[in-house]
Image 1: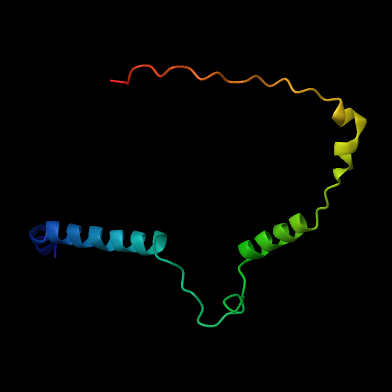
Image 2: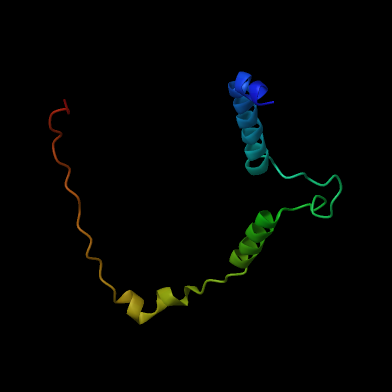
Length: 94
């Protein structure tokens, strides 16, 4: 028995390493088995889409009041913007 182990030492080690690598791969990287029939699989709209639809409906229900634009405080606001002057184009980047 010991003589057999000495003779095939590298072959046995390689086979064991391959077996260990396969077990590790199948444990960490294998996809979980999906059920054939499930109540979750029948769902017509995924939950992300349902969240998006709920947010869209909330946005549609918002009513904006334009009375703020006729308020005297809004009308008293001053425009402090500055006009940008066109400058001549310099040389091209090398």
